[in-house]
Length: 425
Image 1 (cartoon, rainbow, N blue to C red):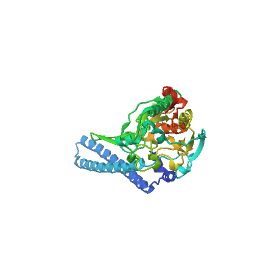
Image 2 (cartoon, rainbow, N blue to C red; image 1 turned 180 degrees about the vertical axis):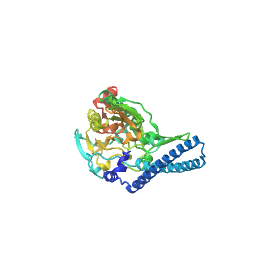
Image 3 (tube, helix red, strand yellow; image 1 turned 90 degrees about the vertical axis):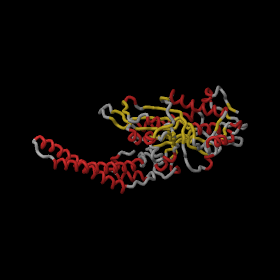
Image 4 (cartoon, rainbow, N blue to C red; image 1 turned 90 degrees about the horizontal axis):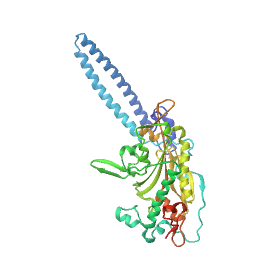
């Protein structure tokens, strides 16, 4: 959520900056509601002042033995007017809050302007895509050996975009998650967390999934209580800071978790519906950092570096992109995407997205840090990134390390997690 001051004192400039994201802010509606809010607030304060004065006069009159019937009737009338005003003010504030909850974050000044992914800026590349002397298979063909990757059974159990993995491929998938967690905790300084994958609406609103993306979420309802399956561990990890004030010495706080993730993602995505590219249920190792405002952009670069290290240790070629204003996520001020090379598609595909949200989420969450100089609480900055999406990493490992006979060579970094196997076949 944006700082309300931006909508009250800098509305035109805020609307202009939001337009670079393709978001049209209804400034007329905001101005009208703000005008009503100011008027009702002023009238409410005046009514409270008059009522307090009349109540004091009643006490004085009673002390003198005077008749207070008229004064009491006036106070009662003021009370009715005050109640109506307070309700009207609450209604206006609720409408302003509804608008505010639907407004995306403002892009950082370093973010390039653009409409969509075509305007993203490539920052760097790592690794050289492998040249094959045989016909490359995609991950679905490779996974069909021995029934390792079984979309038909997934569909039978749950419907489209669910997959069953078996045998050595399931083992490799598990190994990737363990490898990523060990790397982030042992070398990158993250605290491993095990968090719920079903959360309440407050948690989803806190990180910006609600109300904007309600249609993209899976939800459950038990005993008239509605809860949501997380789209990423960013939700529970970041919400651990909700309604807290951290000591400055505790920041930056780094947390990681390996969880199931769920996304409805209604619609068709062509080739992405084949295999494991775009699933309703998938697994991810998430990285979350909580930072002071002055440090968050340095923390963003560190966060991206941690995701890159995973790819480098696995020997997977990738490129790093700086997303343009029109392609960033709802809560982000600046985002880097990492795209891994997939030989079957002869292109790079997203495998990690790392973002700084500044105080956008923290304002919703009331996640704060105590300033050691002033002693006053200030909003923290929140950052998140995939470290990595396990299913897509599995696809990249399979395709980049495939052999002519259909076997898959195991990257050296994963062999300790695979009982020493150097290939699966």
